[in-house]
Amino acid sequence: MPPFVGAIDQGTTSSRFIIFDTQGAPVAQHQIEFKQIYPHPGWHEHDPAELVSSVQTCIDEAVKDFEKKGHKKEDIKAVGLTNQRETTLVWDTETGEPLHNAIVWPDTRMSGLVRELKKRKGADELQDICGLPISTYPSSVKLLWLLQNDDKVKKAYEAGRLSFGTPDTWLLYNLTGGKGKGVFVSDSTNASRTMFMSLKDLDYNKKVLDFFGIDRSKINLPKIVPSSSKSAYGSLASGALKGVPITGCLGDQSAALVGQQGFTPGAAKNTYGTGCFLLYNVGESPVISKNGLLGTIGYDFREFQDSKPVYALEGSIAVAGSAVKFLTNNLGLAPDSAGISALAETVPNNGGCVFVTAFSGLFAPYWIDDAKGTIFGVTQYTQKGHIARATLEATCFQTKAILDAMEKDSGKTLAQLAVDGGMSNSDLCMQTQADIIDIPVDRPQMRETTALGAAMAAGLAVGVWKSFDELKKLNQEGRTLFKPDVNTKKAQAMYTMWQRGVQMCQGWVVEEEAIEEDLKKATEVSSV
Image (cartoon, rainbow, N blue to C red; front, side, top):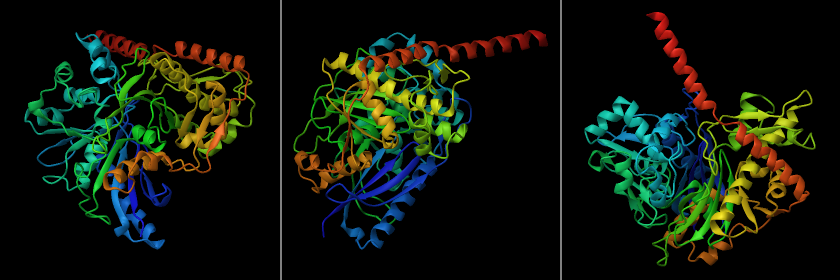
């Protein structure tokens, strides 16, 4: 029987497990949404135990489906993992118990801390080492906030019992046995999102750790390993696939780059998920952006045919699909995401509305921490359809800003953009994207490219696929090409309005903090 490869896809709002055949087609799968915890405005957390249990359930249920279709689970030769990045977990090294809820990547509780860190000596030197600027986004700042604000975390750190990791590390540790048995590693694509790793050396950098005040003797940091490996990740310790090796691991956006076969310099993909992330392959040497982008690891297949790590420039948009969910869940404008796209199609344009979806500030290329979500141009003419359309356009405008920055950094103009993720299901959104960036947008029929990328990494390690040429043949049928179909001047005028909105949405967080401080002082004075 031909082999199959499983892929764990642990995202921001759900976990899933997909079993792929050698053609890259999904054969069986299971998905579970898990609880989103918002303790305060701007805070976003996950239950660490639920992340693990949701993945375990997905594996078992997908295998049941696989066997019902007449297949044997013994033919699943390996499992790959892909995961939400930057999300920060801490646990007690001795007990294996989590010490705090996971702080999720778009959380902005660290805004004040970020402003303090930017004033520290050496702050402007970090990006040249790790590729990331200081912001609320990377794991480093989340860990520092925990060390400063949570007593359990502080005590574990001082006692030398604190383990730190992103979701890949936490899942691998638990899925391979947990306390005393679990593998404690992170692949380089995930490690590159912490700020602690040198892009050139693929190891933790003392200068960066010292800047954040992290003492290596007091904290357990995972070993950094390649994205595809026969032995680095161990095997599943329980469940339907007990004993099956885990042989691949990639952060979700790197997995999507691999799943879209972005193996040559100049290739780019954009994933429209909870956030939106554009990765651009820059080859075997890191490029440090001068225009608001991130330097990162694209993928790291060092163990495969003596390959070298491949680097990427990344533009990260904090809010994309989550803005659509905001319209459905918070405002009730439609029952689901497809309904928002249909609602947007009821009007010919945005009616003068611009929605800067800065729920977590603005990420690349702006890096504005003190912005908040703001709708401009609302009049009595405004309808629900205009708001829906402006929401879809917000991600498209930010993608253009990222592409403009990438052109400046790379000196090259992108010829075509490969896309995937939930929002890419909307034909209107993808046509709007093509119109705004003025290049074709290429959408695959099978859009689970993030999970496919994890499966590719795992399959390479065990010989399911034996070359990059084989991988390039996967998932090529039924692709749709959206070509620009609007006057260039009109598209530029729309983008100019967006840029005005970006300038006008700033300052909210700082002003709110100042108001709260004034109220606190006034209360203290009145009580004297």
